[in-house]
Image 1: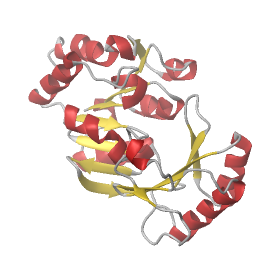
Image 2 (image 1 turned 180 degrees about the horizontal axis):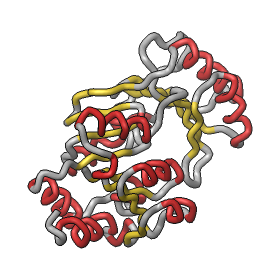
Image 3 (image 1 turned 90 degrees about the vertical axis):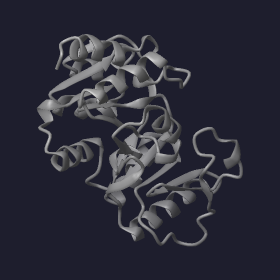
Length: 254
């Protein structure tokens, strides 16, 4: 199986996917190699790329969800009471802060500009005045610094995830992440981790690159990720993932 992150890994910096990359992934599938994406994006934020790539599996929402061709096959959610408490703490930090909450493929958002969002125009407006009642996979908000985010996460026994060059922080179920989702998917498919090649660029990809049989960083990855990888491919804007696959998998006839 080939497992790849999206932003700044498979995608160009402008958010596009080249025809060459799509063709390489299709060739892999035609040879019996499964294609899976593993992204921090919500499912609806990744949907346009899912339609373009047609992966066999979609690990989204920072590893808390797995879908097979759009059908949910795995979910890791936090206690609903804990989720509502986190939301109220975030509002207490700043009543005007924007908060997004994933519940399966649905995303709630307290923004009045949902329709203008390229990623989340399918989100549902929610002002969080009433407690949420369904499963919560992920909560994201902008915070003034990492210390505040860490304190909220510690008080509520959840996992904290930061993002490259952003002041947005995700609060996730304590035992969730890309690693847990990958292990779960490999177990379901009876595929040894050694038979998975993974690609990434950011710190939340490091463990993924380490546990898979081959971990490949794109050359635009942060330094720690490149240090954790088995090898480094060309950059995302040079179709590094596709070129590496063509040279090391397809040309090798495996």
